[in-house]
Image (cartoon, rainbow, N blue to C red; front, top):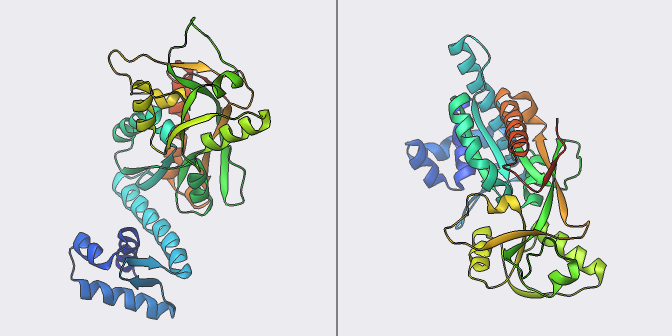
Length: 309
């Protein structure tokens, strides 16, 4: 087993295709297949499963992929450290963000990494909070912000902030400053689809209050929710971070607090166990905290209470 074989193997896993990986790596497909066969012979086990739909990993293949990514990142960090004469954040780092959170954080993080960590390649992944936390716990992602996540053995969890969920839609008559849950139940609602953490929280709150609501439509896309709200199809429930970068001329959308203690969520920063050994991952972890803290302190991220250091 050598570094070249590990690079080839990880590319196949990521592209889920030997043909696509061969094209991306600029090598002949038979040669790439032979490298995989050599790896499987060395470990005396199957690493990949081939089917008409593409290529997937076996359980052992997933273990090798996880360790291969860690080894390749450490080699890249060593290369950069030798070239620079000092330890320097480097390599590929995956950062998961819930969709609403990405709207307020993603662009600032890309800008900061480009300016301050030129040897780091940041991969931003949007997803549901539950999926992001699970990916970090299983060492499939380096760092992620997840909502209401629990501590797990192979994952460090740092609470960042409590975020209030708001009623988002057209301005209500009389300059209403806040609404009750019962008043929300009387409005036509457009809501995030399951398994979105906001939707789970909404369902739980209405069930506990013994209230039913009118569901107009549901979608996993925040952009569709906001477009429908602007078109006055109804109201939705989102944090104010979901509105970042979505202002349009003449838009009459407002965010109104909901008078119910259930309508808030805790955002925590999750760090995988293997990422804790990487300078690049730790640098991104610290940058997320710094950026979020600055946004809250400057009131550019509203409707939140800072919990971090």
